[in-house]
Image (cartoon, rainbow over all chains, first blue to last red):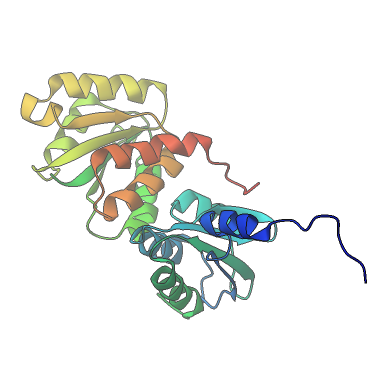
Amino acid sequence: MVTHAKSPDLTKTWAFLTKRQVFDLIRKNLVVNLEQGLHARPASVFVRAANAFQSEIRIGKGDKLTNAKSILGVLSLAIAKGQEMILEIDGPDEEEAASSLEQIILSKEV
Amino acid sequence: MGNASFVIVSHSKKLADGLIQLASQMAGPSVHMVPAAGLGDELGTSATDIVSAMETCPEDGAILLFFDLGSAYMNCQMALELSPPAIRDRSWIVDSPLVEGVIASSVVASMGLSQEEVIAAAEEAYHIRKVAE
């Protein structure tokens, strides 16, 4: 039997991670179903919806990640219909935000 | 205070009209946007046209003046001087890229946020890359 000289105290590490909310961040990969893509008008609908929540919300495509509450940020991603995007939500109302924003992304039209 | 109004001061009437068409599509009908652009059929801006445009804005909200280039700024300043205090005291000239600034801040205005946040969104447009990094 192999014994370690000293096993690390993991409880402290876990407490630290939980505090940083590493585990309760919502991360979703979605394929955009919007007929016009996440451009002009649909993008503004999305950004208005995102701003209704307190949570920190990021949207990304590929390795780019930006603030989902900023219209210019969302437009800069130029996400077209059928493309995959990432949604990262962290905060007290993250569940509601995730379902509300997912609904927009998966709609054909908004 | 009600929603902020936007006065688009541009040398070109077509430029102002096109920008208002685009921004209105994104911000929706609740945000008042009005052009003060061109000199008849010629290119140019006029302080009195800007004042007239400001007078059409709803009485209970901030008025934000966005301009395209150089001398349009001078005419915005002159328009503020020519306006009665009741209008001047709730008007701001916004220093931002014209297209991005108007779009960013009109979308923020459509959410009913404060005029400070509306102006901040426009000025922030200088720092947001057009192509995501």
